[in-house]
Length: 165
Image 1 (tube, rainbow, N blue to C red):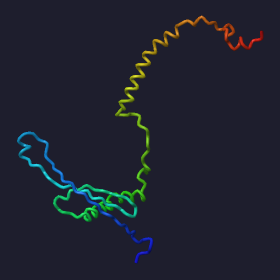
Image 2 (cartoon, rainbow, N blue to C red):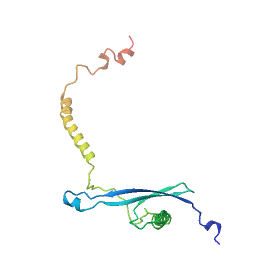
Image 3 (spheres, one colour):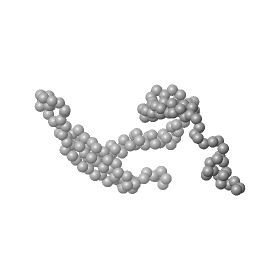
Image 4 (cartoon, rainbow, N blue to C red):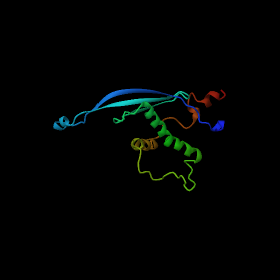
């Protein structure tokens, strides 16, 4: 007898099944379409419902004339999980995936593929700079406006408002 912590958990499942008749006809014109008959088959959707966790998993399948029962399809689903998905889960628990002691992460200086949006934005920036350069030069060469450098000459200046009269 297994100790209580090693005893397998009892999981109850409910199976649901739907069947849909389908027809496949190849896309071709003329005589080839008439020579190739349509292929008729039944697609089966089997839903496996874990009553303990409430998790539902469904599979869409064609049994190729084997007449598999929904229980056989569910067993195939559960066996597949045990063979692949859970394997990676257990490996991850024992081994860190992203631990590489001999590798160093360095940001690449050479990027072979550029983002087209960034390229378009850089072109817009360059075009705007090209338009602004003559304006900057014109502004730098312009003479100051009619105002004097002395702030007291302005009528609403803080210096004039605070000056004793």
